[in-house]
Image (cartoon, rainbow, N blue to C red; front, side):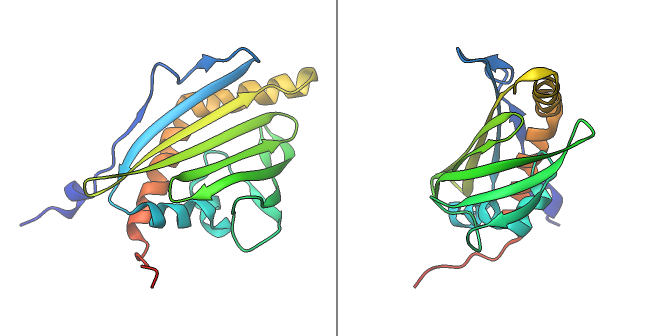
Length: 177
């Protein structure tokens, strides 16, 4: 008898070399990788659908305003949520959204750079999630930056990568004609 749970196992692993790195402008970088039994197109649908995003995002938020039905290159959105017990909002700009991945920036009390890279591999796709966090100004900005970094370092990004893979694996694969 085949054990389906074993076949659907997802491996998430933080990249220890960059999980807590800092660049020259004071941005902390976090990375997680997972392999999904899904095509890049399935993963892209999960990454760009506002209703799906809520289910996998490492930091819970609501999409308040999106200039389209899904995230795509050039689109902008306004999102809000709670960070460190404080209600915050971010202006999101999508730089790229295609079968190679999703890249966006979120500007608010802190700055967040996000890159989800999608690479086809035997039997599915590898997802590399990279998030850079830059503290904002003042005490609140520094507190929110540190709290976000702690969430990501504590496993929120790894868990999000796993949820993305599971959502894509359970989604139907639609082939364009």
